[in-house]
Length: 228
Image (cartoon, rainbow, N blue to C red; front, side, top):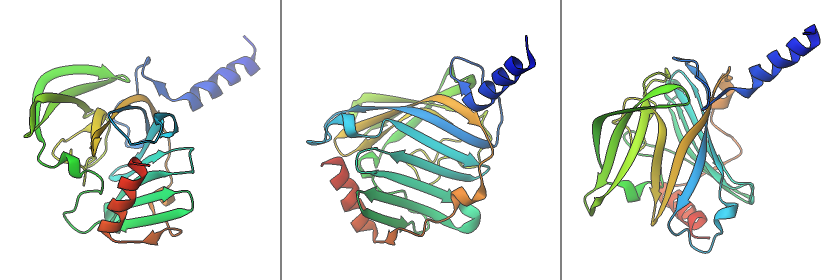
């Protein structure tokens, strides 16, 4: 095989990451996880076709950036965690609107009020997702005890406190298959690719082109985006 062909194969392997059909590299402490997104329930008159199709989570030690952006109106939500800089921010964008809310100590990221009171029970079930050994937990809600949700998480990705300020904060692992409730709607996420890559520290800095607003205001805008 010619050297040029070998070089081409090496470059392709370097940029494609670890597919879930392959065995991922264990215990990486920085990189990206790409998730597929599935919507269930009512999102108002907004067609599901214009909702975000992917979730990208960037991580570096204890820093995490959760990005869910739609091509429709460049709209979406970012959650940013950078403990050393004291940053726990939610960013909201819709067309020309750009707002952010810095969380107060002990607060949960906005938009998850429908998940208040949920009960998490860890089980002995295991599976493999993207080459990572995963543990299982089931989630129930006091008002709908017959409805059971499953989540899968792994301890083989080295991120500190990966679920800070989320409804899953008591789970001590990186979520590989999980869900969020947004009002009457369900959003389900499943990891499809894990990339080992260097993430610059600048990616976890506070954005400066967003206007600071109150918790009540950003909740209103998030609800507006869901019910458009």
